[in-house]
Image (cartoon, rainbow, N blue to C red; front, side, top):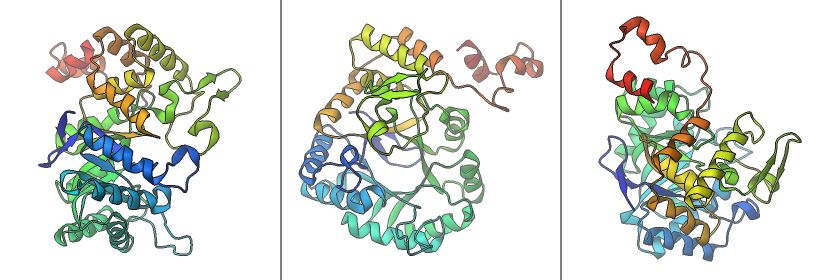
Length: 353
């Protein structure tokens, strides 16, 4: 296992992290496992060198935090892992203030998470999603209080627009240590602004959903003309998360190229998709959500795979996102009207690519 700096923090995280959403019994068969299996999988992750474990207060109705905390305690691992959890979703349907980004919800949520996890501190505490109402300043101030109290070490944000982090940087540079976003061959919007944001601010980027709920693992067959998805898994049997429409234009081309690279290299589709993602420079860590030991072992093989340059280039090109304004306006070609042929070095690299 290799380790990368979590942005500008003094913390190193494993390039593959463990996403603990499936630890628990409340979300149905495709999103759960027994507590005994959870303990085994956490142990295998630790043995493989994973030191980054991520959960949330709503995963499996709170059981994910409980089971993860117990497993880390059983393996005497709490002091050597970077533990993250999240708040933001409403957790009590009778209490309209049990969710959101405000101080009240945040301070109540962190105490409940600490009890469920059985720990005195949370290394990285994420705003799971912005409520679109609470000012950024209020969330930052609440986080500073929690840091001063020793309850959390760092603040992260998840599933927010880049301007939100920009506002946070303007109010309190360095207040946000990490941003967690959906990132895979079919969802590359991170590259529009967040990659540059990370470069300029030092915020760490963490990716979730690297296999698009199994779509990139070859678990399904997409019948585009009939808009039918064949296969057994989260996308056909229960609810899913992510931002991928299996029938959207271009998805079939990505899956076809992924199949080709998998056949040419002799690696499973999931391993190829993960190896491609490991090569994306902005990422500090990629969260693996697994259903059992075998899936974890297969996914970890990606850390040992060095994709041929032509295969990586082919995947880059077929999955290249269609850019909207203003991204499609700020092209290297158009910048020649500003700089002439003397393009800045960064734009020369983009043009060559």
